[in-house]
Length: 294
Length: 233
Image (cartoon, rainbow over all chains, first blue to last red; front, side):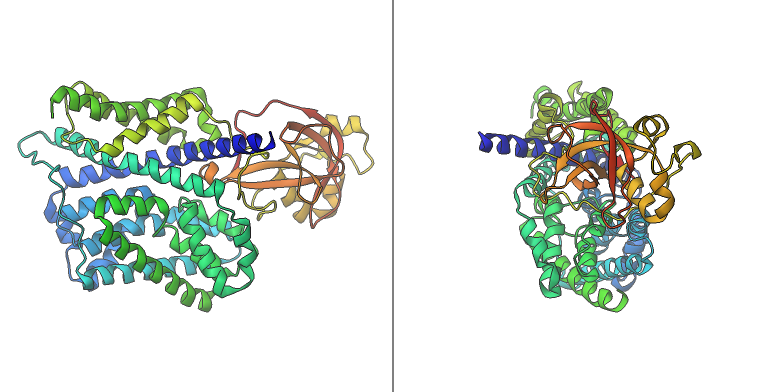
């Protein structure tokens, strides 16, 4: 009987969290897909190439800086990066641009300043560690020559049709390809939230060497929106500040939802490369910058 | 792909999820899952999705390829329109829901009439009480200190006995959605005669504890769950 009640409670929690994550993500996904549809249909390729297809030393910082000005969610990252790449922008710059939007945008920084009121060093540390991580990821992708697989045969040449029809076609295509991934990601994250016994993780907060990977794992499995993660991070009062910083820097770059989308759009090898290197870059930059500033 | 079949296969997922978004906003149940500020983005997204779905189904613009993963869009449609889970509750099976005390960042206005003195009667407290939520209460206990002890207050929330056996009044505070919910609570000076998870309205006064602020309860009545059950920033 008690077991049945427990299962019922877990199902209720799971379904509430699942609905919450889907409803939170879909408007941002639609925004991202419409923006990327505009990118592919209305903005001439030469514009993007002029802005971002420059030498790596310029294009990646410029891409990260431009992305930081665009308020976006993790859910916009993959479609925007894919469409920019399709438009001739180097993959390294395209991904830096798309990742910078959720990681560095002004709303995220204001939220961090609010959650850590009286601790401006935490805002500075988050911005610096995230920005450095993006530069390192971009430089790594450029140096390694990693490219996503060529776009599939499903991208049809719609030359000759009206711009509106091409925009609708691109939006339909991207939404049909990403909505399902958002659903799967939300289901995975809700499952982790309900069934992962995180209480034991909190016991590990006293040791920095354990606290940092613990917070990195939490960032991946909780898959919080970057605009809200600072408030959850602020509640980890037992953890060292550097470990809290890790939580905020890793989340927008690597989480369950992103991994599923990376895997589907960019393929397994590219996903492993992006996720692995992004995790290393985020951990290293957070540790170094956190040690100096916090 | 046949254009009719393609239009239906591509249009149904978009139409279904778009209609679900609009339906959930229409019923007000979006407040069970996301903050009120998401209402307009949900409506806009719903309209865009319905429009794209209709464009496919009426064969104005038919998707050339519909991935198999699109079928899983039926799951949120099912959970939003049929299962319709309620908001998070203190008696849920959530393994992790943050901590009881989180940094208090808020502002409050306490009318002079609510300052009834520390020896006020139950009737005085009930008549003059100012409505506060747990975050405002914690903020007032930290910032106002001595003066706050004379204030009559009313607070709504769910009752629970915590793992240390302390009766508490609990609300969930969200930033974006229920996935980032953090419990905020105040302790009560005595257990109430309600089942855990019951929504109640409590009147009383601050117990002068600044470490774990609590309420000396004057009265408590059961209430319906509020339309917007979460606190938000």
